Image 1 (tube, rainbow, N blue to C red):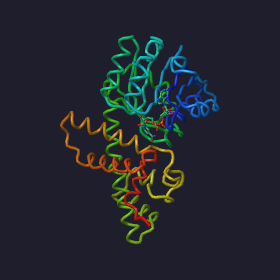
Image 2: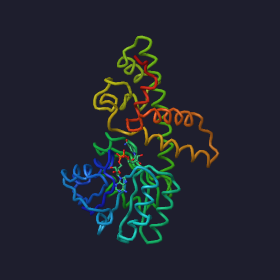
Image 3: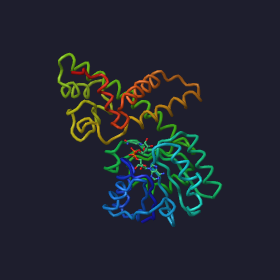
Image 4: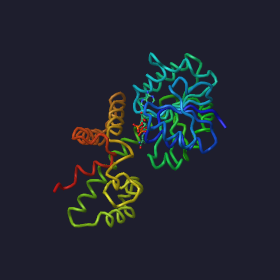
Amino acid sequence: MAKVAFIGLGNMGGPMAINLVKSGHQVTAFDLSVAALAQVKAEGALVASSASDAVQGADFVISMLPAGKHVLALYLGEQGIAKDISKTALVIDCSTIDADSARKVGAGLAAQQIAFIDAPVSGGVGGAKAGTLTFIAGGSVADYERAKTVLSNMGKNLFHAGDIGAGQVAKICNNMLLSILMVGTSEALQMGVDNGLDPKVLSDIMLKSSGRNWTLELYNPCPNVMENVPSSNGYQGGFMVDLMTKDLGLALEAALQSSSSTPMGALARSLYVAHQRAGNGKLDFSSIFNMFAKKA
Ligand code: NAD
């Protein structure tokens, strides 16, 4: 059993922290949201009144925050908690952020002799709840091996992608592809509906044909084709359009830096930004399906 500080208990962090509690770790949690704290408290986590309090004496410090600015501020900002973390602790940031911010946090913590890895995740809220996430880590092999003590209680597939920041690069490549698959699946399903097909029947056909992909298998964007997915719940919960738009911005920044050609990623970002600007930022990213739907 390890002492774990967990900061950021949103759609992902909440269920991840709860899985650590269920695995027997002593979890001390902190979030700015009182409601989020109450949820993990009900499942047996201890709650702290600040991030600094949460990390006192922790063996592992895990953060799951929206974006790079939040992670930088948490560890290295004016009220940053780097000074409060034990020198023997391992810090694991699971947020999806730009690789440069991950490297800055790593360097800032290293200056205080604190070990750090970036370990963004794939698998969505369903994977977070089921403890089947994929973790994509960047950092030293020794720190990655040490992180497995806690990562294996929250995920099923653990990868070491390279040095600090490499986890983030792999993650944004994956999310760029995911956004393209989600847009493509949405337009294909809607075209089928427009031409008289039942979206459930069409989904079943494509699942056994060459258009098969993750969104059809686990996250169908058309309402009422699948149970227990955001599209069948008014696009609530899940992975917000705001966050997908952020990730696509990160992907395109990386593409600019490496002079990579990413026309499909650029188009997907434009579509998601338009969808966000139409007031859909807080909906799940599968709500892009509505962009193609015929309005009454
Ligand atoms: P979320 O908005 O539901 O949760 C973020 C939480 O962080 C909120 O509860 C917020 O109150 C808290 N927070 C923000 N600043 C804080 C601070 N300074 N101190 C303490 N708490 C703070 O977001 P999420 O969906 O859980 O996503 C978190 C990260 O995981 C993002 O980087 C996202 O890109 C990534 N991610 C999300 C999914 C998904 O399906 N939702 C999948 C993979 C990766």
